[in-house]
Length: 484
Image 1 (cartoon, one colour):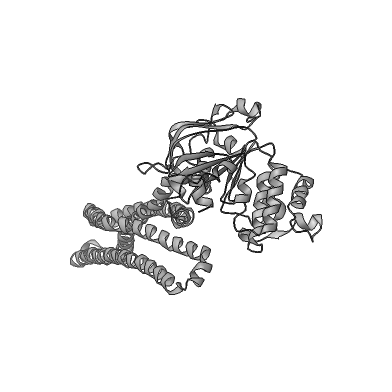
Image 2: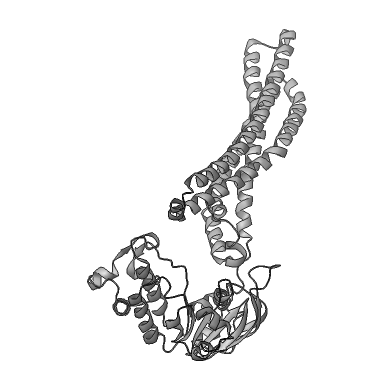
């Protein structure tokens, strides 16, 4: 069970974000990793019980054969009946069990969504609607549960009826032929005939349980068949040895991409060259494809055609771990782990306390605390004990401490006060002066730091130029976004 669980986690971590994690509900993943994995333990117990029953059944058959050969003659009929009865049950029971497993996922999904969005639910006054959705999914699950239990009761009633009928026939036979049986023989026959019948029927019951439990293993196996991201297993020793990338220039060549097959392209014919150490501002309306540009460089989405070159090397078939290690990204959605400030800035423990403290000092974080207190400051789950500005600065510190040649900042100063914005501006100049930097932002003061502005509309680069030039062009899209 531990091995299966470890392999499932590995597959989930390596699964494509756009093709798997963006489309599969969290509840379904949690269901597979908890209930379905737990079923594997039940399969082991069921198999053990099944084997014990087979030995008990064989023992009972031998004893019955010694004292009453009639039961042996009836055995084929009993076995045929048990097979037919079990087959009828499994036709419905297997599918009902599968539905039970599936019906638990929406409950987990709604529960996790409710926990994450509790503030919005309360401020929007939709508590009753959320509760009703939750209860509706529980009703669906227990509706299936009732049908499943009804099937089991149907099987149990017919099983018991058949056992009693067979047992009654044997008793009648012995009553009509008393000359063949002693009192001792009758007692042994009754006892072991009953055990034989119970073991035979219970064998079919355990087989049913084994079939039903195998559905959990089948669902775990589906996770193990998830196709991993391309390049997860490639190892590029030459790039590692050459300390790639040395300069950090980026070039898009006729690049087309979409998030999933059979949907419109989100990036269309992107042809763009970014020189090393250049600061590029990327602007556009919501949904225009700005963030998709980040996903393309980090290879979260794969190209339909075209390529991306970093230091004149096509990254398409290169090792994903290496590519993502060499690119620092500050995403728009901030994420912090429940641990110390040091662990949040340097999760892998690669940097010294002195390096971390220098960055903390430059970002004016927790100025009232001592150096030791800063490093050991406890951050609660996803930074619940921090302000938005503090969370942004910590994530920014995590980005710049890596000193990578390529840095991408997605809305680094959105929803921040002027003082925090100024801190980020100054540290962009200080720490990213030798890095190729892509700034995705709609903040004018941040765009002024950029050497060049790229305007994206409907997944295409429609305008390109210096800030001073684009802001004066009344016919440009950039002008309409920032002036009109």
